[in-house]
Length: 110
Image 1 (cartoon, one colour):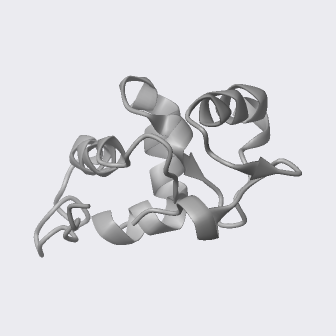
Image 2: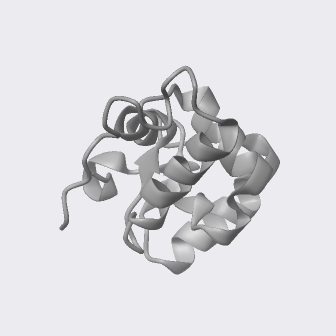
């Protein structure tokens, strides 16, 4: 698996950066999540240098072209608004889901 480096100082999370730069950084990380694996909003945020809510906002507003379904909450659950679709897409990739939660210990990334 290829290591993902955090964004360098002056990158997308710096004060002068545009929201689109942050969105693109989020999308870049999400595109690296392999099929059958998942990450959390917080883990993606740490790689980009933003908080989990900012990651969620980027994916909600324009993440349709990336595998957004591979990003879940820290407890392995899906957001209510996309729960059925997200869990279905993950199940199709062979991601283990029990009681509506992904087994992050088994398939967490990175």
